[in-house]
Structures are given as structure tokens and as C-alpha cells.
Image 1 (tube, rainbow, N blue to C red):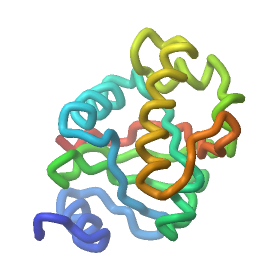
Image 2 (spheres, helix red, strand yellow):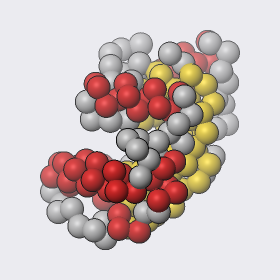
Image 3 (spheres, rainbow, N blue to C red):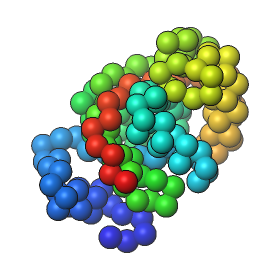
Image 4 (tube, rainbow, N blue to C red):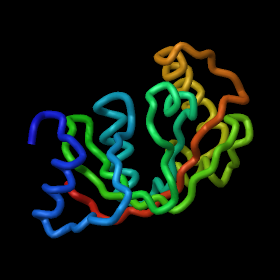
Length: 155
């Protein structure tokens, strides 16, 4: 595989490890915007503390990517583009930033699991993301709120 594997390369490599993804809607993704945050988030998912994630709808639109769907399988890449986890999406909802629930914030598994912590950390993250795509962060910005199950720890 190259330094940045393609989806077909990843699917082939997993098949060689006995993981058959034929017939599934497979995508690849990553968590965090630094090596440290990526490692921390992957660890939280692997320990099943983190069971959900969210992203900015505007980013999906800007990047021309299809939105995640229930039943999708995501190959999570670590910061250095190596497969780390296999997840199955169980639920996807579009929710304005200001309407994210305390239950969803806790399921994200970060910090003290409070909505207050979630809002502070995610506002900072989404403000950087808005800068990347030429938008302004606002309380009503639409988020893609995704719940998932850990299928396989590939590390």
C-alpha cells in the first residue's frame, strides 16, 4: 500500500486479513486534526467510551463527499494513514450545533462527558473547520451526528 491508501487497497488488505467487506457500503475516515487528538480519539473508540461522532455538514458539502448512512462501514485511519478501527454506523441525524443533546455529547466520550465540555471543545474545532472551508461558525450550523458500533480493532 502507498503512504495514503486508497479505499480499494484498504478493502483488499482487510480481505487478506479475513475481513470480508464485499456488499457493504465502505468509506474511510479519520478522527482528530493532530496526531495527539487522533490517537486519543481512536483509543476512546477502541475502549467503547466513544460511541458517536459529529462533523460539519458544510464540510461534507464543501468537499463533495456523500453523507454517512446507517449501515455504512467506516475504516478509521490513524494519523499516519494506517487502518486502526472498523466501525458500523447505526444512526445518522442532522442537528444544529445549539441543539445537540447532553446524551449525544456524553456518547462522544470526550472530557468530562458534559454538554458544556462538548460545546467548548467542538466550537473551537468547528471554528477551525469553518475557516478551512470559508464559512463562519454560528450556533445554528448543521452537524452530522453519527452513532456507531466498534466492529474490529485493527491496530
